[in-house]
Amino acid sequence: MSDLPPPRSPRAGGPRRPGGHRARAGGSARPVPASGWRGAPPAGPAPTRPLPRAQSVDPSSAADGSFPASGRSAVPAGAAYGGEAGGTPPGTPPPGGSAPPRTSRRRSTVPRPLRLGATLMALVLVLVLGWGAGLLLWSDSRIEHVDALSGAEDTPGTTYLIAGSDRRGGAVVDDDGTEGARADTMMLLHKAPGGNSYLISLPRDTLVDVPGYGGYKLNAAYSFGGAPLLVETVEEFTGLTVDHYVEVGFDGVSDVVDSIGHVNLCIDQDVDDEKSGLLMTEGCHDVGGDQALAFVRARYFDPTADIGRQARQQQFVGALMDRATSPSVLLNPVTQVRLAGAGSGSLTTSEGTGILDVGRMALTARSAMNSGGTLSIPIADPEFQTNNSGVAILTDDEDIAAFFASVGDGSAEPVQE
Image (cartoon, rainbow, N blue to C red; front, side, top):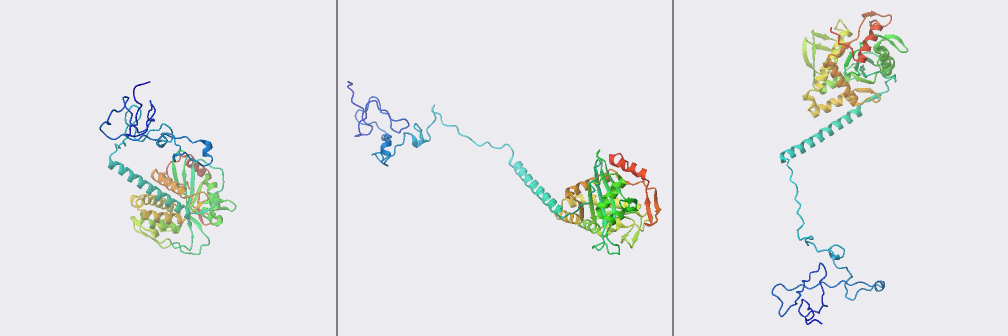
């Protein structure tokens, strides 16, 4: 038997513990020196009291709702620090004695002014895109549609038929006794597969074969059967299938010009035409909606009649495109709304032709104007006397077929007048 006395409790007067006892892992009791304390305890803080042992619960006694006599629940040692036995208290260094590494936020290398500028640019982009999308949706909802396409077999490229409807009783075109409406202005816009674009005026007095009616002037087809018959007549005359039909009321022409302020038009003589209302002096002028409409419609003062008028119509289209795409219009939200409202409110298009198609049409027309792709149809006799329709424009079938074949494949060359 050992001569050493049994180990004593760290606390004076505490119960003795069996020899070889060790404090449980993770406990707060201080280890007892092997030699024990002799005499008074060492100087320093008072030793801490050891944690009580965990007591196990007998399932047979827990079934009747009883608990350990000590009044404490049977919690495994260390469960208070992680829910499992052997857990360690918060702040305890990991094994090895080193403290956990501190993580620091990585600072951006991009200067703050640049980051703020990028954020502002993103916000501006979102606003611009949202504004544009809303304006497109609103404009598209205002367009009227008509079942105008014939369903004929498609031909290469994209073909637009643009008609200016001479409606009577509007705010601009007065009622002169003419019954119904006539397509007073007609243009064929074609984008060939190779990329060339062509804008071709179709004189309203051109003698054509109107399906179901026989030989008449081209504008009679619209009077007889509206947009569908006009499309069918143009397709038979040109050999090109119309993909998009776009009709602009003459009241709309005036409104569109007024919405952007003016267009710049030039004329080579003084004109005072009572029938159209055109009053201009020789030279170039910024004109408003009424005079722009008169410029497009006037023909009686000109000895070349429809031939001269189609040249003025093409000039008007170019002037309108230049003005509508100028910075003073594109960068002005109020003017954008006015233009979108005036333009879409005066349009009637074929089914499936929306505001985006109209926008592509405008870009194609601009390309044709800038590249010299404004053409005139070949004419055999500009003053052909008919039996029932007065003077008409006579064309040769072979010349017309060859002309529009070259337009269709993109090989047509501008005619120098």
